[in-house]
Length: 142
Length: 142
DNA sequence: CTCTTTTATTATCATTTGATAACAAAATAA
DNA sequence: TTATTTTGTTATCAAATGATAATAAAAGAG
Image (cartoon, rainbow over all chains, first blue to last red; front, side):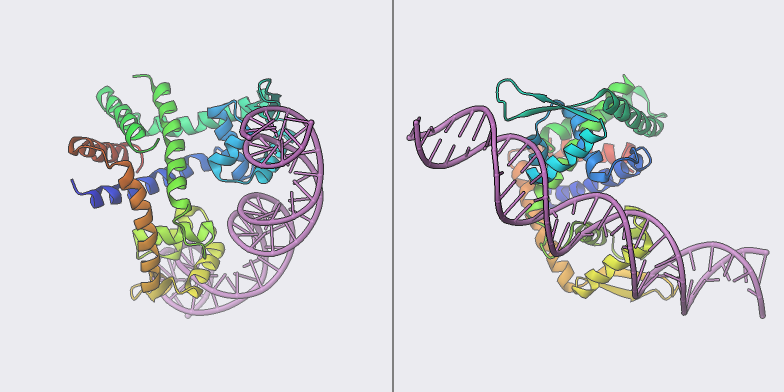
């Protein structure tokens, strides 16, 4: 197998993933949120509870800027900070009820796009898609 | 197959793709470029020749803003505009020699990360990865 | 106990990005 | 031919983002 060819396949693939994700989320994003705020909220939604350092590391933002954006999300009542008892410097950041509802709504719009795309897939094809996701997650995107 | 479960698998997967791509490119990006400029240059690299409208459509930028960024890339001698003979309103935008060299260098750094990750993969595993990329590209990310 | 590191906050400034309007040339439709 | 649409440019403004510095509390190392 030609490694170079596999790499180009990888590059084209990641570009497609970005484009499709962008297409599917652009109308679903709550418009009270800036792009960065949405990114952070989505991360919290799938990884909660998270700390400020988690966000900072994951998106290569400085702590200062992450802190500013988290404050804005808290001002909008979309997240909640809870104290960590083991280490009182750290915070547990979670979605608030309103934040959870907001993200549920967003996800359901994206899900509709996704379901529309796989609507004609047979059971066997869906199994194949699921396996493909597993393979790539395990061997490349970890 | 549970569609809901498949959707969550999809969401987690796209998040992983973003994170890994971000990790691998962050040190490879030419630092003369802003994030948007890099995104555009990468798009031109894999899709050239492109028009301004292509860029505008693909990244949901207004023509004005796309035009501004393209001008900056041209000022940096990274791209070239060629006239289209069929339709003289349109431009063929391509990488210049310097732009090609810049992107070759960037891609080779990202490729090194990629190769490092698959270095212990057997031939069979690489075939499996390639097939998985094909399946997802054909059924989801088109 | 003291020094250092980790975690987080606030303030400030420059740059990047998004949005809008005014303009113009080429192509297409009526 | 004339009107409309497509493609692109330039200028301007506001908002978002990135970078840096100053500060502080808690934890960990010595």
